[in-house]
Each structure stands twice: as structure tokens, then as C-alpha cells.
Amino acid sequence: MTSDHWRTIKSLPQLSLSELFESNDKRLAKLGLEQSGLYFDFSKTHLNDEALQAFQGLADHLGLSAKTKALLSGEPINISEGRAAEHCAERGIGNLASVENARALHLRMKSLIEVIDSGALGEFTQIIHLGIGGSALGPKMLHQALKLGDEKYELAVVSNIDGCALEPVLERFDAGKVLLVIASKTFTTAETLLNAQSVIDWMREQGVADPLGQVVALTADPEQAVQWGVDETRILPFSETVGGRYSLWSSIGFSVALALGYDVFAELLDGAAAMDQHFQEASWDQNIPVLAAFADQYYAQVRECETRAVFAYDERLGLLPDYLQQLEMESNGKSVTVDGEPLSLHSSPIVWGGVGTDAQHAVFQLLHQGSHLVPVEFLAVIEPGDSLNPSHHNGLLLNCFAQGAALMAGKKSDDSHRNYPGDRPSVTILLEQLEARSLGALLAFYEHRTFVNAVLLNINPFDQFGVELGKQMAGKLAADDGNRLDASTEELKKRAFGV
Image (cartoon, rainbow, N blue to C red):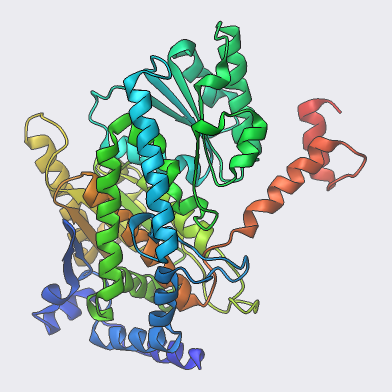
């Protein structure tokens, strides 16, 4: 039974990190792994040979191999919705028909980019990309990470329904030079379509005779986009089996491919495919997403850590923690198993983080001396992204490495206020350079890690029914049909709207 495996894992001796290093001089060689221009250092976690063996037993019992094969071959692994999860097909791995369909849709996207670049549709120099959730987080994060500053198009990604997000973009953009990109899987997303209508209205007010002629739609429901008014030749579809938080590999990546060049997008796909292949072929003890998930589950279930902190020591990766919040918490924030039974384990940790070195002066006090045990993930890039004095980048890297060392080693003091307990875990991910291929591999790593965590928890990571209830409540409040919610909510509505 699964519970027996967990009892074995929880009964293992809890050695300190310093003891683990002292007892095994090959620890770093075993837990430091390279793939696709990335180096993953798991040595500062509490995983050891006994823990790895126990987790491999759990993974085998739960059918990780078979479920991985099902995922990568396009079987209907999303059981609650009865469909496959085929984001890997966008990278060339999966059901042959799905891979061919993805390739054809990528070529369609490439062709439209070439037409736009030629000026045949208008002299566009600015892009407003509207979406929410994965339809915005992925493109926005990719653009910030990979832009060089001399692109042909200025890209603004807007997701929030709050007018304070959209209005500043409209104030600085030129309506006649704007390509409006509407990204919505169903093309019914209320926030996105309200923002889109506001942009269309603004274009008309600014004298654009045919605003819809400046619109491109990214959707899994082309018919819905046509009904909204988008010309069918400017609709870039993607498969219904590609989930929103996994969709940046599909047509949802159009705005980034247009802004940065299609070659950049193609390299992103290649990097992800390399990680897909590693995940598919590597043994569990050398499989990077699997090892990461073993560490995640050790801290969640054995040490009962409720959060995991991610700190990017590179300004270009500043949006990565936001991206990971959706990927991990929307996927694995569940309380029932695949069988619909109550989950007896802790589900997804609360993912949070920031940018180093800023975070060192904000939250690292808690990490070093607080009462919470928080596993930390550091990301850094060896090659600088700037041309300033090397002391900037050298100082950044040294701070990153020192924080991990300090969390592990601590520092004893007779003054309790100055005592650092140490033995606090971290993982460091080191990129040789931040470019499309390595970023693609990194993001695919996080996707597969999330999937392995779901298998170990015996949950379905591919639905997100918890997103819907609040939307339904908002609809009820807006309807004002006599049905009332709780007294507190009704009072808030009264104070805001006077009714």
C-alpha cells in the first residue's frame, strides 16, 4: 500500500546536511547534474541514498513510468476532463497526429509573422497582448527574460481587468501602429474580452477606421473568435488538449515570436524538447525533474514545510516566481486523489519568491533565523546580461552562492539573537547563459517536476476547477437578480456601488 511507502520514508533517520556531506565524499558528484546548458545542484537537500531508494519504491508503486509514458504518448491522462495533456506535442514528443498538428500550427504562426513583418497588414511597431493566467504569464515572462532591447516591436502584455493596467499602455501607444493580440483558450474569458473591447473602442476614438483589421486571435476555439469579429485568416488556433498554464509553447507564444523573432521561439521549443527527452529516458536516480520532486515531497510530507521560495539572481528572470505559482499551485493545489478520495498528504506548497539581491534585504531574515523551515531554490546565470563593470555580475553570483552556503552552515553564537541554526536546505540551478534554448529546458523541467509531484501525491494536475467558483460568484453579484450572498459580501457591494 502507498501508506507503507510513506511510513518508510518518514521513518528514515534525519541527518543534518553537514553530516550528509561528511559521510559521503561523492555526494556532490551524485547530486550535481547537467542538462541542456543547466547545472542542478541538489546536494544541499536532505536527500541521501536511503531516501532516494525509498522514493523510487514509492514512484514504482504509483506507476510513475507508466504514467510518464501515458503523458508523453498523448493518452487521456487528464481523467476528470477525459482528455490528454499534450503540451509536449508542441515540442515534438507525443501522439504522431498531435505532433504533426502542432507543427502545422507553428508553421501557420510563422507564416503570419512573415506577413506582418513584411508590412502587408499595416505598419505595426507595437503589440498589445491581452490574456490572463497562462495566456499572459508565459508570454510576459518569456519576453522579459529574452528581450535584448533593440526589437522591431514594442510589446505590452496586459492581463488585469483593472483599468490601471491597461490605460497607461493606451496612453503611450499609437493606435494606428498597434497590433492587438487576444489570447484566450475558449475566447470567452471575461477579463480578456473586456480589455479587448476597450482597446477596440480606443482605436476607433483615435481614428482607426477598421480596428478589427488590426487584431490577431490565439485560441482553441476559432469559431468563437470569428463570432467575436476576428477575421479567420488572423486566427491562430491551438489544441484543446494544451492546458492554459502549459500553452506558451503553442500559438499563445505568438506575440513573443513576433517581437523577438520566430527563430527564438523555435530555439525555445528545442530546449524544452531536450528536457522532455531527458525526462523520458534518464533513470530515476539521474532524472532531474524526478529528483526535484523527491526533494519537494520530502520537505512537504516529512518536514511538513508549507512553502517553497524561489529566488532568481538575475533581473531578467524576475517573473519566474509568478509563472511558477500558477504552474505548481494551479496544477497541484488539490485536496482529492485521482479516485476522488480525500488527500491525506500535503498538496502543492505555497510557491513564493523574488529577485536577488533585493530579497536578501527583505525576506532572508526569516529564511535564516525564522521559525519556519523553507526550502529555497536559487537560480543564477554564469554569463552576464549586461555590459557594465564585471563587479556587478560577480557580486550577484557571489551573493547567490553565499546565501546557499550560509543557510546550510549557519553560525553558532552564545548570543541567541546572533545565532544562525543552519541545516536549511536549498537547490541551486545554474544556467551557462540565459537564451531561448536554456530557458526552454528550464521551463520544461518545472513542468515535469510538477507532473512527478502529482503522481507521488496521486492527484490530477491537469484540471483547475477551483478557479471557477469565484468567477461564478462574481457573475451572481453582477446579475443583481435578487439572489443574495452572505451579509458581509452584500455590505461590501453596497458600500462600493451604493445599491
